[in-house]
Length: 67
Image 1 (cartoon, rainbow, N blue to C red):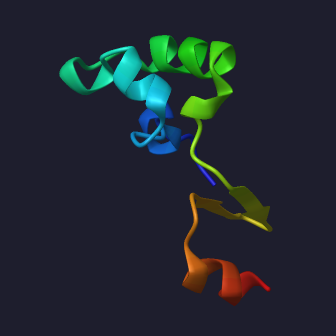
Image 2 (tube, rainbow, N blue to C red):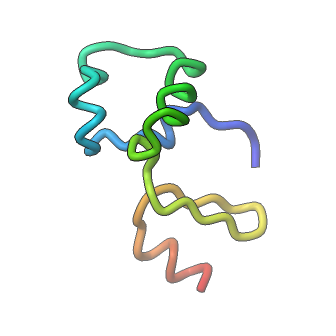
Image 3 (tube, one colour):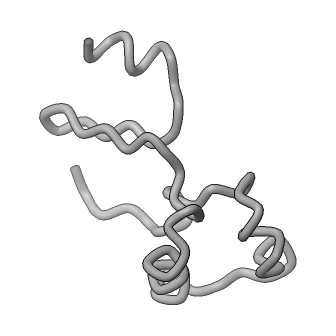
């Protein structure tokens, strides 16, 4: 599992995403990480690690496959 950009973990449906105006700008990877630390609701959930596989957000089929 290689490094992935913070935007892969960003919840664009979170209220805070809209409140911070993130849909109108492209924050850097480091800025997104800092925002996610300050506002954990910006992180897509669930985050599931199974072996070398990472599932970000609710994906019924992917979650069923690891079960």
